[in-house]
Length: 267
Image (cartoon, rainbow, N blue to C red; front, side):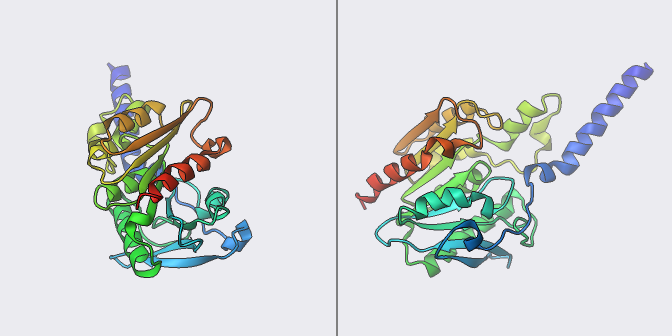
């Protein structure tokens, strides 16, 4: 009886720890990056995007050829925007305009990252684009990486963009937690659900889904489920050997560029 009681006690203890610290796990906040030039990003400026609740988001903006799309990059749950410099440079080198945005709490910015608050960051970004860049929303590619796909999908259910690109997307945080913490009732414990699966068939914009079949963080079948449920014009790029963080080793920027330039010609 004592053994059973100890097991039950440990179960509730570890469940409580996961519940209390889940946002520290989901939002692995980063330090402030250096300036864009330190990452070999020429003609890229630091910009501050101010949200409706007055949070200042550190962002980098590169204005390229106005006759090519603007790619808006929403990053994943770890590291800062400087750690994505080698990725966005691939688009900058093709004369695209690029805006990469730090979530609140990341890159030395103030604020508490939550699902609701990241949606505010996304809305603030859309407003900044409309007021400062000269690009119309149907000339904008919304690019979500991992956690960033949650915000990308939320925005793409509200606005008509050139496209939405999802790199290593997930169906929901609840589904991720359910697989990772099987013994706990995650349905009732997850605070930030980012339920992409329930929204994906409400997209207003063409969709490109990119995933590695060996993804060790987000199971590849999440991408398959999202792609199959989406009702818009769509394309998938599923790479046999790729894992979660090495998709650019397989040249996925070429797929992003090709998909969007075909759409660009029709606007």
